[in-house]
View: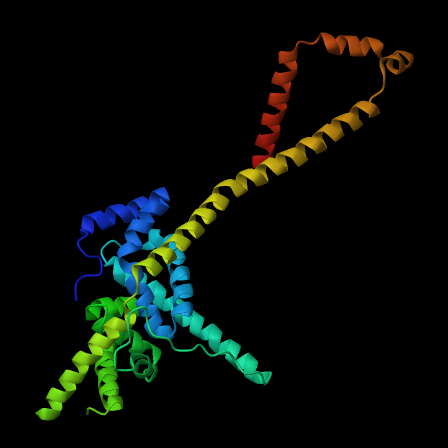
Length: 185
Length: 120
C-alpha cells in the first residue's frame, strides 16, 4: 500500500503545516489535507458503517485539525496525527449516539439506527460492513488502518492512542475473529 | 496446509473488498474539502472582525455617555452672571489667566502623586 501522501516530500508537508498554522492560510491547509481526505472518509465510513455520518465526522475532524494544527509535533507523521483526531471524533459521536439511543429507549421510542451502505466504490462479494460490525470499535479501526490504509503498527498506535503491544494484539485477535466469522478457520 | 491456504486466500479477498469499501470518489472528496474550507474561512472572518465590531460598538456607547455627561455638567455649572452676583467673577478671571501648560503639568503631577500613593 503506497504512502497516503503520495509523492509529496516531508519538507513540502512541513512547509504547508507552518503556513497553515502560523499564517492562518486556509489554502495551504487544503493542500495539506487533500491527499488524506479520501482515506479519512473511507476510514470513518468503515468505522461508522454509513457514508453520511462519516462525512459529518470527517468535516468536524478536519475543522478540529485546523484549530489544533499548532499542537502537531513535527517529529511524527501528519497522517497518524490527523487520523487520531478523526478517531477521537468517531468515539465522541458514538458516545453521543449511545446516549441518544438510551434516552430514546427510556421514552419507549424507536431510536434511529443508521443503515449500512456500500462505499463510493463497488462492494465486493464479501460483506465487509457486516464483518467489520462483528468487531469492537478499536479492533475495527486497527483492521482498517493496517489492512486498507497502509499504516504501520506504530502509526496505528499513535492514531488510536494505544500502546504498540495492544495494537498488535488487537489486529491479531480481530483478524482471527473475522476469519472464524467467515467460516475459513 | 489447505486450511491455511484457504485462510490466506480469503484474507486477500477481504483486503480487496475492504479496499473497495473504503475507496471514495474524487468528486465527493473535493466537495467535502470545499465545505471545510468555506467553514474555516467563515470562522476566520468572524474571529478577525468580531472583536473590531465589538470595540466599535463599545466606543459608540462610551462616546454617547461621555457626551451626555458633558451636557449635564454644563447645565449644572453656575453662569457668569451668577458668579458675579456671588462676588466670584474676579476669581474666575484670575483662573482664566493661568496658562494651559500650568494646568496640564499640575494635573500630571497630581496623577503621578496618586499613582505613587496607590503603589504604596
